[in-house]
Structures are given as C-alpha cells and as structure tokens.
Length: 221
Length: 221
Image: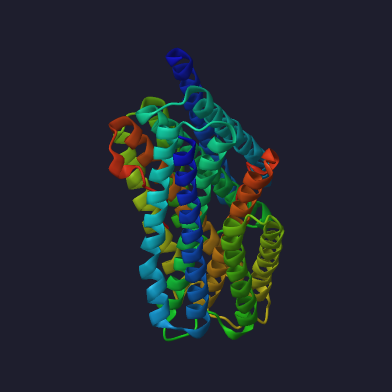
C-alpha cells in the first residue's frame, strides 16, 4: 500500500509541476502579448488556458481517489489536501494570465498600456514571471529558500500595483478612460497573481517544514 | 463511528451556514456603506472580516481531522472535500465584501460611485445580497432550485458588470479618474462575488444530486 501511495503522490507532485510550468508559460506569453501588442500570442494564451483547467480537474480527481483508496493520515493526509489547494491556486493564476491576454487582444492593434504606465508593467511582467518560475522550481526542488523569493516578488508586485494607482491618479495622467480601466484591471490581475504565488509557496513550505502556522496562509487581498 | 461522523458532518454544515450568514451580512453592509457613504458601517465590515477567516480555518481543521479520524469514502469523502472548497469560496466572498467597504471608507465623506453609475451599483448590491441570501438558504435547506436562482443573480451581476464598462467608456462619462478606477474595481469585486456564489451553489447541487459533472464547477472569470 505504501508504495502505491508514494507512486500516486509522486504523480500528484508531477502534475503540480506541470501545471506550474503551464502557468509560467501563460503569464510570460500574456505579458509579452500585452507589451508587444501581439494578437496571435494573446490568442494562444487564451486558447491554452483549458489545458491548465483540465490538469486541475485530473489532479483533483486523483487526490480524491487517493484519499478514498489509501486513507492517508497525519502528514500524508495534509500533503493531499495541500495539493488540492495548490492546484486551485495554480488554476486561478492561469485564469489571471488569460485575463491579461484578453485585454491585450481586446485593444489590438493598439497598445493597451499607455506610455506613462509602460515601465511599471514591464516590471510587473518581470516580477510575475519570476513568481511563476520560482513556484515551479519550489515544487520541483522543495528548496524552501525559494519561498522567500516568491514573497519578495509579491512585495514588488504590491508596490508596482500602488504605482499603477499613482500613475492614473496623477493630474498629468494623459490616458483615455479605456486606458484607465485597463491599467486598473491589469494591475489587479498581476497583484492577485502574486498573492496566489505566495499562497502556493507557503503551502509547499508547510509541507516541507511541517510548520502548521503557515498552513492557513491564503491569498489575502 | 457512523454516528460520530454524522455529528461531525452536521457541525461542518452548520459552520458553512454560519460563514454564509456572515458573508451575507458583510456584503449587505458593504453595499449600504458604499451607497450611503457610511464610514462607520464600512469600518465594521472591514473589522469583522477576520471572523469569516477564523471560521474558515476552524472548518478546514475540522475537515482534515474528520478525514484522518473517520476515513470517509465515496460520497462521504466528497462531502468533506466539497466543504473545504465551499469554505474557501465563502472566505473569498468575505474578502470581496471587505474590498467594497474599503473603497467606501477610502472616499468618505464623498460618495465613491458617481451619479451616472449609481443605479447600476444599486442593482449590483441587490443582486449580490440575493446571491448571499440564497447561498445561505441553499446550505440550510439543500433545496437545489435555489441554485438556479443564484445562477440568475450571477447572470444579472455579469450584465451589470458590462454596464459599468459601458458607463465609464461613454463619451459623456463625467467621472474623475478616481471614480473611473473605483467603478472599475467595484464592478470586478461584485462580478467575482457572484462567480463564487455560483461555485458554492454548484458544489451543493453536486452533493445533493450526486451529479459529478458539476463537481469541477468553479468560479470561471
């Protein structure tokens, strides 16, 4: 039984890594599509989100099956429950990448982000890709030092989110109302993306360290 | 064992109803605070969100304990897993109510919502309160007809969300940039609130009917 359980659990872990890789690809291409007004790339991100959703469904079924067949207790049980929660966060991160791509597609051939906010979104893009990369690496290596880096990336995303408000509320802001709406939503999407990354990082840290204080960590905003 | 399990499960169900009641109170007071520029009411909503968060933590611990001690299988197992997911959705609904209250507080003594968008938010408030009321009733009665009503309320919220974009992007829109930002975020918060309500309603329907097709229903947007 133990061997079967561990094999199943490895598969769950592999599925989470695969989901995280897809999220990483989605947020990278979504940001590129946004900053380069690339319609085809935006379209690809939107079309590929279903692959993340399907992985989540499969992973969740696998976890429920695992709970039913193997009846894990103690740490094993918490690993499975955490996997369910991590997959939900990754699925949301995929949705948020899709939303970024939808705004890029909606404004094509124009740039969605006007010049005075561009630098902020170049930085948000970089920080969000970092979050996704480190989340994947954390899932693959269980090196909990990476969790602190995800937290730093998220702090940066929060600061950049505040910068988007400072930009649009500046009396000199030259943006149209459409640009104000887009910048507001894009800022929110990136900020939420970072929150979910932190949530995933905390759950993995909990699994590795057994520190239960972090278990109820959640995306707070 | 069966009796203990059923008693524990009843407690989980009662906790979900209690969470949903708190969410209902939060979204009602948040909307009133928004539409009446009521600083004290906004403050109360913000201060009371931790009660929803604490209930979620307790409920999650109870579910994990239940899984470990009672080792449920088949439907019983899915009930517990669904409870974990429903509590996560309710916790997010509480956060979204808090975000509405935060905008109301941030603009006080001014009204956050300018006159041309007011009617839309009066309707969003009504629909969101309906979602919460019916979610509570659905949890309490398991009358799945209520799930269809939650879906209708959510459809209305989606349409009203589109109305907020139509309002701000109208060439006649008289709002300041701050008002555009606030209306954009408030529209998003209400829209997400509805999505989570639908997610909860679908999961309860799944539990009552055993229709697994709905089990992976999630907040899509």
